[in-house]
Image 1 (cartoon, rainbow, N blue to C red):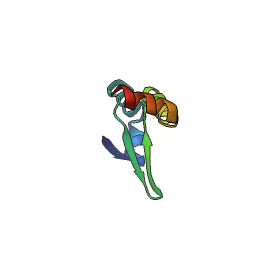
Image 2 (image 1 turned 120 degrees about the horizontal axis):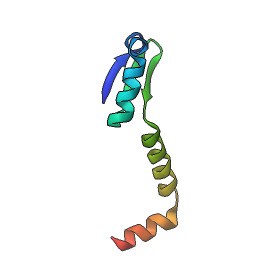
Image 3 (image 1 turned 30 degrees about the horizontal axis):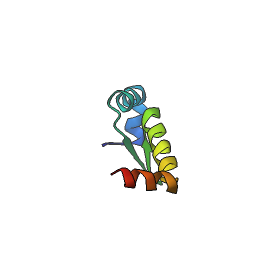
Image 4 (image 1 turned 45 degrees about the vertical axis):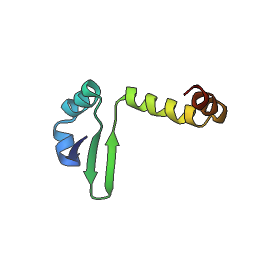
Length: 67
């Protein structure tokens, strides 16, 4: 995971976003109020799918039975 602060992010915004997308590596951005994480759309969609799938008890049961 890569780290930066808001000032550096601002200076290198396009390069940082390109790196997040190309390498699918989250970027943690620190600020005075706390941290934020920038992730690629692909990673975001994967996370949403995992949340959905793991919230389906019957599906989890079937997967465990298959294992």
